[in-house]
Amino acid sequence: WDLFQRDVIEMCNASIRRDPRGTSGGSGTLGHAANKIKDVMMQIYNRAGKRHAAEMALSDAYHKFSTALEQSVNNEAAMQGNWRKVAFPERKYERLTSSSVVCAGLSALDERSAIYELRTSLPDSFVGISYVYDDIGESEGWMKSVVGVGGKGGATVGEKKEKKGIIEVEEEERTTMALASDEGVVKAQVRTTMNALLTAVQDRVMTQTGVLQSQELRSANWEDGDVRRRCADDDKGQMQVGDLLTANGTTSEILGSAPPPEVAEQPVWGLDCYSRRNISLCLETEFTSAVAVEFIEKWLLPAINSCPVDVAHDLSSATSTILEAFPPVSNPLVCEEQSLSSLAPLPMSSQSGSHVLLRNTLNEKIGTSGPPWLRAAAFQLHTAIKAIGLSHFRVHPKGHGSVVLKPEGLRANTLVTYYRGEVYPPWRWGEKMDAIEKTQQRLCLRPNLPYFF
Picture 1 (cartoon, rainbow, N blue to C red):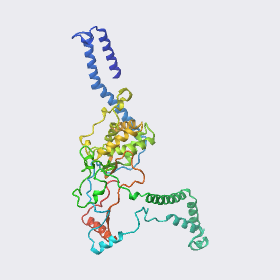
Picture 2 (picture 1 turned 180 degrees about the vertical axis):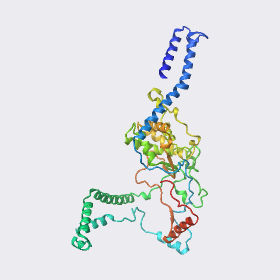
Picture 3 (picture 1 turned 120 degrees about the vertical axis):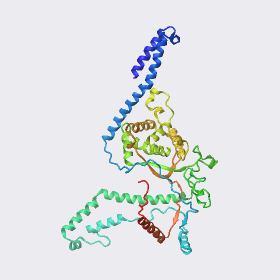
């Protein structure tokens, strides 16, 4: 088609140059006829030639990406059942008046006892894991006792042989010696010990640096971080995600001159392992595996959550969001295939909602720190989705969550928000669990499991 168009255009231009009057002559002149043929040729090329070229490119892409998926084994887990394409409804929570509230239904004496148990003279600090079972010491002592090395309560080999058969004891000794000399077992024990030590050091450092004394992150869904959630008489106690967002996705009317929000609560989406593997396989036809991992984790997942909820299940909407952050390609000869004219526009709902804040942050981050391969990788995945279909790239709703709005992200050891919840005496909590279980059995209700695994 391109060669045919160039040949016809060149013949028409040559005819126009041979006519002294050019294209200004009337009907029947050589220049006028050549100009009409030239216009008809451009219409034919735009109507049929480009469509044919696009179909051929799509066919080539289908062969390329389908071959890549067929030649690689994808045994990763996938979400079973029907593909849910609608976000889960937001659960309504009662706003607590303080950080810790004693549960309802207690007598005055039990309530005073529960409040008394919460009182402490210790300062706020990180205490790490509340309970750690020392399985390393147990396994080490077991191995020593079996081989007769000694230790507290250890029996000698002779004593064991009197109680057990000689063959059984020797077999146990060989197994124990093999475990003791296994580098994998030793490495696992050392790694577990180092992790416990690192956790203790991290807790002490965060306590000394005053992490718990810092301010909570500013949320786009609340006026002043999480402060207003403590107001029991607030008439906005049942406000849903995005209710405090203006139509254009900003919070200027709410926050006034306050600093911009750092997090936002909104419906969130994610990939299952099967879809993530397919994305990596398609990207690795042109890029390295390291680039594929960085693209998925740092750019694609934020782009998915920056899409409107009615199209967030469509992964091509996320790739379109990334591509639209780049300026249009001015020279079609340099990057004709990555022109944004072929991208499907987002629906009108994309102009308002809680996702707009994240999309603006993502666009800013792409403009300031986007890697040079980002546009090509996004177009590569966009082409793969268009060629082999969405069924290989399913995006699933995960419920409601928080997304980061700061382009530079959050620093390590940053306090996001305090943990708030109801305090139950042990016996009261046991009564509640028993009541829930009996009610589910009596009404034949299924257990209330998490939405997303």
